[in-house]
Every structure is written in C-alpha cells, then in structure tokens.
Image (cartoon, rainbow, N blue to C red; front, side, top):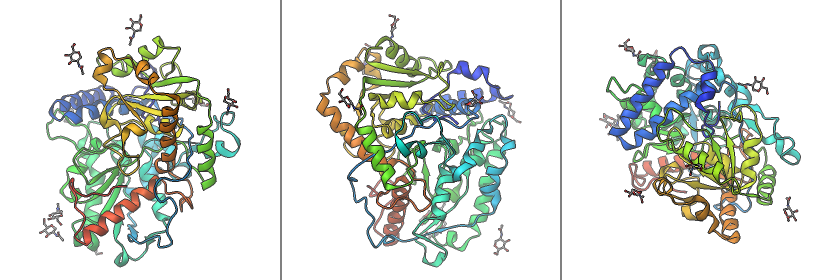
Length: 492
Ligand SMILES: *[C@@H]1O[C@H](CO)[C@@H](O)[C@H](O)[C@H]1NC(C)=O
Ligand SMILES: *[C@@H]1O[C@H](CO)[C@@H](O)[C@H](O)[C@H]1NC(C)=O
Ligand SMILES: *[C@@H]1O[C@H](CO)[C@@H](O)[C@H](O)[C@H]1NC(C)=O
Ligand SMILES: *[C@@H]1O[C@H](CO)[C@@H](O)[C@H](O)[C@H]1NC(C)=O
Ligand SMILES: *[C@@H]1O[C@H](CO)[C@@H](O)[C@H](O)[C@H]1NC(C)=O
Ligand SMILES: *[C@@H]1O[C@H](CO)[C@@H](O)[C@H](O)[C@H]1NC(C)=O
Ligand SMILES: *[C@@H]1O[C@H](CO)[C@@H](O)[C@H](O)[C@H]1NC(C)=O
Ligand SMILES: *[C@@H]1O[C@H](CO)[C@@H](O)[C@H](O)[C@H]1NC(C)=O
C-alpha cells in the first residue's frame, strides 16, 4: 500500500480497477465529510478515510517506503538500564487464529485490494526494497523495505512475542496485549455496505476476551492493543448516513483498553498515537548511526520539497494548492507529483527528493496525519506543518518537545492568504536549519521500527517507547498514581 503520505492522484485511481462499490466508498466518504461538520476533527479524518480508501484501491502493491535512519547521542536514556523490566512485563494472549493469522492468510478476500498480502512478508515489515541500491551507501540499502503503512498491528505482535519483557505467566504481568488485527479485520470490509461485517470480528474477539479472568479483573484497564489504521476507522457514528468504519471503539468492553494507533482522537488518552511505519528498519545500532550520519552529511540543494498529488475529489484541496505553488517556485521547491510519478510502486524519487531538500511540506493527508511526516524526518528533512494536529498533539512520546526546535509551522489559512512559504523558510539561517535538522536526526531512532524481534541493543525504537510507556502507565495506575483522561499520562 502506499504511504498515506503519497496520495494517489485521482486520475490514477480511475485507471485502476475501480472496486465495484466505488460509489459506495464515495458515499461513505461524503458521509464522513458530513460528520466533520459535527465533529471538527472528524472532517479531516473523513477526507482522510476517503483518500485512504482510494489509496487502498489504487495501491495493491507495497508502497515504496523511504529508507531512513540516523542519529547520534540519543536524547533521552537510549541505553537500556540493567534493570530492563522495572516497569513490569507483558503477557501476550494466544488468541484464536481467526483474530490474527487467518486475517493475513485470506488475502483473496481482499481483491481487488489485495495489497495487504504485502504485509505478510518479513513479519509485517513487508518486502525488501531494491530501488535504493544506488542511493544508499553500503549496507544501508539492506535496511529498506516496502512497508505497508497499515502494518503496525502485525509488527507490534511480532515484536511483543520476542520482547525481552514478555512473560508467559499472566500472574506476573503488568500489562496484557490483545494481538487482534483489527485494522485488517475492519479494513477488508470498509468498502462494503455491510456494517455488521465490520463489527463481527471485533464482537467475537471481545466475547473471547471477556471470558478471560485477567480481563474481568480490571475491566480491561491493564490491557492494550494496536490498531494499524487511524482511530476514526473504529468510531462509526450512529447516523445511518454516516456509516464509515467499524464501531469497535464504541463498544463498552473497549472503553478501558489502551490502543496504539497512527492517528489518535484528541482528548482520548486511551488512544496513544504511534509513528506510522516507514520503510527504514535498522537491524543494528550501527545501521542507525550510519543512517544518521548519511542524512546529516547530505548536501541538500533544494530549499523545500512537496511530495503528493492533488485530490480532484476535494474542493479547494490544499495539496493541489501546494503542488501549484511548488511548480511555480521551481527554483526553491522540488516537486514529486504522484500523478506523474508512480509513488506507490517502488520509486526512488521520493527518497531522493527528501534527501536533497532542507524542508518538506506536510499538509494534512486524507486525515490530519500522514505517513510522509515520518518519511521526511527519517530522511533528515525538516517538516513544515500547516495544521497543528498533523503531528504536535499526536506523537508526544516520540517527537521532541518545543515544536519550533525541529519543525516549522505556517498556518494553512495564512498560506492561502498569500504568506510566501519560500520567504518564511529562507529566513532561517544555515545554522538554524542545521540545528533543527540535528533535532530531527536525533529523533530518528524513536520513530522507526527496528527489524530484530528483540529490538536494538543501544537504542530504544518506537516499539520500545510505546510499550514502556504503557507499562509505566499501568504500573502507576495500579499504584494509584497515574491518571488517565488528560492528566498525568505518560510523557517521554
Ligand atoms: C446499504 O445497505 C442498506 C441496507 O441493506 C441500504 O438501505 C442502503 O441503501 C445501502 N447503501 C448504499 C450506499 O448502497
Ligand atoms: C469461556 O471459558 C470457558 C472455560 O475456559 C470455556 O469452557 C468456554 O467455552 C469459554 N467461552 C467462550 C465464549 O470462549
Ligand atoms: C468493572 O466495571 C463494573 C461495571 O461497570 C464495576 O461495577 C466494577 O467495579 C469494575 N471493576 C473494577 C475493578 O473497576
Ligand atoms: C472502566 O474502568 C472503570 C474503573 O475501573 C470502571 O468503573 C468502569 O466500569 C470500566 N468501564 C467498563 C466499560 O468496564
Ligand atoms: C557537499 O558539498 C561540499 C562542498 O560543495 C563538498 O565538499 C562535500 O564533499 C559534499 N558532501 C557530500 C556528502 O557530497
Ligand atoms: C502559479 O502560477 C499560475 C500562473 O501564473 C497561477 O495561476 C497560480 O495561481 C499560481 N499558483 C499559486 C499557488 O500561486
Ligand atoms: C509495480 O512495479 C512492478 C515491478 O517494478 C510491476 O511489475 C508492476 O506492474 C507495477 N505495478 C503498477 C501498478 O504499476
Ligand atoms: C485571510 O483573509 C481573509 C480575507 O481577507 C480574512 O477574513 C482572514 O481572517 C484571513 N485569515 C488569516 C488567518 O489571516
């Protein structure tokens, strides 16, 4: 599948096999749009969904992921302490295979959206990418995969089975992991006009979990799960005209369960935003350090880049505006127009553009968030945001504080009103850009998913940070200290 970030042009869509129920998707999308007017944040998400759907349709191949890596002295304690499991251990349920493995196997069900089959290879990391061999030095090319942006539930499962703080004894566990592939279970039914099907696996799984002593003990409040799709795909509204997604997160039994998701609902602390998987998956500390050094020393000839496609279906699409702006500013801006370039199918153009640019423009995608943000940072380019919700309130555990130290914010309305992106970016001195880039580069280990089941030796990656955060949260909760719902929460 494509990185969400690199949206497929609608023209491209038309040439692809349109699903029989294309109209249905469109209706769902419109209903989402309607929903937006109800919940402001839903809007984004709605368009996002539609786009997702489109992307889905379009991309049956694994998305070209960006390779990435880097980083030097880890910001926060990067080296694991001897007492590695001091926040406790995780028990991973052995769910019936219908809730995970079988969902991977039944790719035939997904036609014409059989891109999910790409998730299966390499434990969820996807097929190896071969297109970067000429771009990445030495063994860095071997760290690149065509990772599906919706594969986090498979990756987290794999990593947890191999986790150093996993326990086989539920009595000794601080946290319980439910390895249900909700994104796949729901995703394969998102574009079918059958809401019951979108909820079926979810309901069956909850029935199974409810029967577990350890779930009953705390009403699920020491349980967690990964949703590989955005949270909005699991919060269907009751209005019959706004029937996007599943009702999974509306189900009472899920209320106290913590969920990792690539886009969280603001104000719901049971949602924890985790980075989209990119295509860079280091196998060792040395891969990380080499990658960081590679992107740090890169000569960046363009001031900024924009990678994406206009969404013909969206009126006043900001991406179309940026595309036009970027073409007009071709002295400073490097365009990768996904209506022209096959962004979803193993191209090196995206990585090269990011590596060669000081800044990268990150409008919202079909929802507020976008995988491209992570592709950008992994390539050592400084992200420029136009909506605060694209990253600032989403990934607190992973991204540095002080947004201005590693990113640029230009309100989308100001851009519409004539603020020149080029002028704003040119005002940063070479030294200021270097400092921001260094912050970005330092973050790389925290936003990537390392390949080894046991993780890296010296760096904590996104998986480690997410799971340790939940363990700490549950431990504090047990001790009567932590508070959910907007209070303490787990911070970096
Ligand atoms: C979906 O199915 C319901 C009931 O089967 C039907 O009333 C409705 O019109 C369908 N919606 C679309 C968009 O096809
Ligand atoms: C619940 O657990 C009991 C005892 O392990 C088992 O006999 C029963 O079939 C389970 N029910 C469900 C719905 O899984
Ligand atoms: C679980 O929920 C039930 C019903 O809401 C409540 O009565 C019970 O006290 C809760 N248990 C715990 C441990 O919070
Ligand atoms: C969630 O947990 C609280 C506190 O343990 C409990 O009162 C509540 O009933 C739980 N909710 C559900 C749906 O079990
Ligand atoms: C970057 O450019 C400088 C000066 O133009 C050159 O000395 C240096 O070797 C280049 N670095 C790389 C990695 O190409
Ligand atoms: C780009 O230039 C064209 C032709 O001058 C103009 O019509 C268009 O509005 C410009 N786009 C932007 C975003 O400024
Ligand atoms: C993607 O690339 C592969 C090989 O590079 C090619 O066989 C396949 O047809 C391409 N798919 C699309 C949709 O372009
Ligand atoms: C943009 O311009 C419009 C019309 O001139 C104005 O109403 C609006 O407040 C401006 N927005 C911002 C953010 O300056």
